Image 1 (spheres, rainbow, N blue to C red):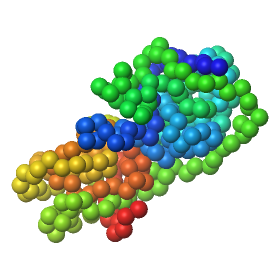
Image 2 (tube, rainbow, N blue to C red):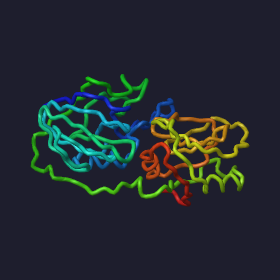
Image 3 (cartoon, rainbow, N blue to C red):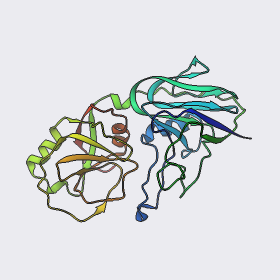
Length: 287
């Protein structure tokens, strides 16, 4: 049986996300996908879902959701307190939802991106092999008040005890692991030293496309040809500013690619808030 969830309040930049689109970079289509794959995957694991089931992703300010049919959900990612009909629950575990229940997420104390997974996944628009919302690819780029999203009812609550203890991995330290980018060796020794020893601050202008850093690095590079870039690519702009490309980034760029973040580091940096500091650390071998 098909039911739907209604967006009572949309929160901040709330979207549907899965693992993203693959095979369309040559057409200029970003990969998109969940900003923090670890928390996204956790939601689906707790629910015994397929690993690519679509979830709701919110940014700093969570949405309020009303469910129109019985199901099971899980709340992961940014640290908050889930309330169903004003009754407090825990994160990272299965939560039974009945018809008419309202989910509110309160006291967001840590992290940036939170996730609401649902048994069997949200059945939103499928476009180019993904349900991830992105402007000019899907019909809408974000979820708005009064939107409805379909899902398949789950009426078997017999195995709804799954829970996982999850440390707040992005809060453990400020170290962000990365490999050398294609243009790393064109940096001077002084530039390399600054890049790897400076404390770098997350800018207020961060979004799903990229995370600028407030500090500058000396840049004496000549202009270069446009080259492929990926989520996790660290670009050095002509002004000396560093930008970490994220899930909705363009597929090519004309700035030097001086670092490439590890998969875990992309999840880590996604959950760092404006004003928090990081430090890059080189890894010598590929994951």
